[in-house]
Length: 73
Image (tube, rainbow, N blue to C red):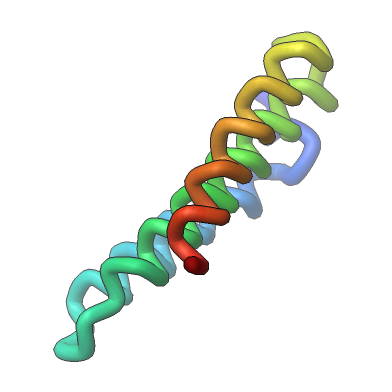
C-alpha cells in the first residue's frame, strides 16, 4: 500500500493535534486550524495520488479555507 504523495507525512499533523489536546493552555482554535490544514493536505494527497479528481480537491480546499477564515477572525 502506498503512502500517497506525502508518504503519510501529512498525518503527522494529527499527532500534533493530539499533543495540543493534552496541553494545559486552551488550544482549541489552534487544533481546529491544524485540522483544517490537515484536511486540505489530505485532499491534495488523494488528488496527486490519483484517488480523487481536481474537483474533489478544490471542493475540500474551499470548504476548509472558509473554516480557516472563520477561525482567524
